[in-house]
Image (cartoon, rainbow, N blue to C red; front, side):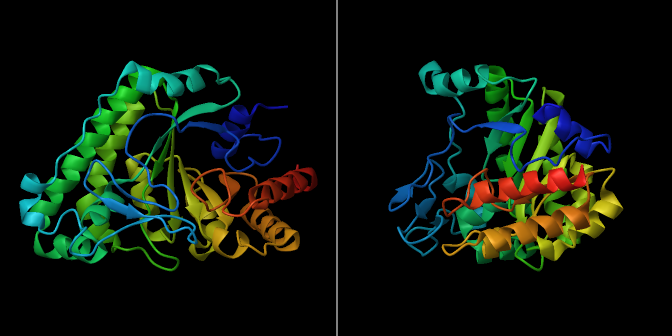
Length: 325
């Protein structure tokens, strides 16, 4: 029987996997690495970038607050005066839990993965608000290019620290690039502003020990797949059914793999059902096939919003492995 790591590599390289890759099983994500102040359920926090996040008790996740009182960046032309880039330097004590976790991982069985969020596009609208971030691309493209380069430089400086400390061999990177049926930006505008910065960042990660880049965007982003390939992404995680994943596997499978097809929206709900999850898993596995595809909830970590959903999906994937391998 192949290890989780071996089975993943056989799957994404079109080799001989002996079962479906089961969601996030191939990555040990080191969430203890010090970085940004993270939102807390039931609280409003201000992080080191000056972004205010609110997470109401009755909501599944946080979102930045963008009224006039709280928006971090109100004028893109003054971003250099307003934005104070946080440090990437942390004490040995702060790093200790991450180092301990990474050292305990069996690297022959799993990839040691660093978690990076939020990505460059998300950071622009977290700082400015979605409307201002979009308008900035049209009205002040030079300033937006400068801000995006600043955010990319920050990521690379952070990458230097985490690579030195825990020697990860995989990167799990978040940046949502679309909604359910469309990307937020046209492919041409995405290419103009985000392709080269992402190529630079991902090249740095890969030049310094990262073997596997998994990019999370739980959205429609089928039109950006050629750019994902150009960036060096190995696995797109969060692929929703609206992308026509079987067709993407057929068209691009030898260049990139697809992880998702189990839409968290309709499946990960308070009144979830085993029948619905098993049906979705069976359809995903039979239509997408054994290569270049990883059945997975589109959720951006190996968890579910409601207890039992993630485990049920994993059980259903095990059943499909018995049927198809």
